[in-house]
Image (cartoon, rainbow, N blue to C red; front, side, top):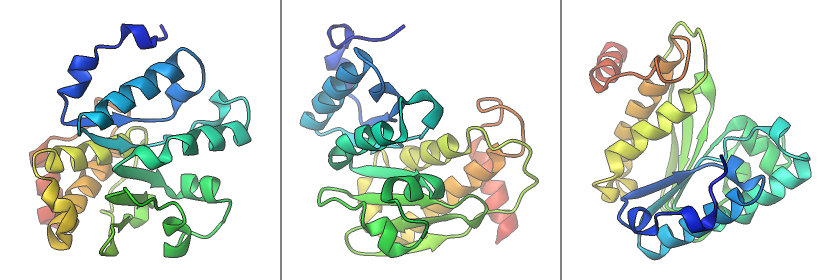
Amino acid sequence: MLLSPEELNLDLIRSAKVFHYGSISLIVEPCRSAHIKAMEAAKAAGVLLSYDPNLRLPLWPSAEEARKQILSIWDKADIIKVSDVELEFLTGSNKIDDESAMSLWHPNLKLLLVTLGEKGCNYYTKNFHGSVPAFHVNTVDTTGAGDSFVGALLCKIVDNQAILEDEARLKEVLRFACACGAITTTKKGAIPALPTESDALSLIKGGE
């Protein structure tokens, strides 16, 4: 079922604290128009916009169309998370470094994240940047790891966006997010593998 713009509950969207979205809904109409209308309503209401492109090339007509549409809404997001593979795809460079990542920066962005799988993640804000290491676990299935990472991040900053301007606190949150992502890879399936907060804290404590 494809949602049309007319079927959106804009009041519900405007009352949200975070509007998180990907790029798959940009592939066809009327989903694309509904996505853009919802995103614009959230932005106008001051809702935090979080974007994870979640690239799935086989679903797109072409790589060129995927890149064009993914970047078409790029400058609307407050937080963007890309994987190392998505960074290469969007920049056209095979380098996973600060220069490549910062080529995707836009003036209104608050946080840019590049996830690096077993190497952790890199983070970029207007005032600082750095990296957070990953947790080493016995990986069974990576499905859902990125979603778990982003979900953990958003749940920690949703009521306190000041964390985005405090590097020490942001690194703590990203370490928590990395722990959640790592635990998710230790079981099969996306939803069944999602960890509890206590699971993540136990992994963090064990890694200290």
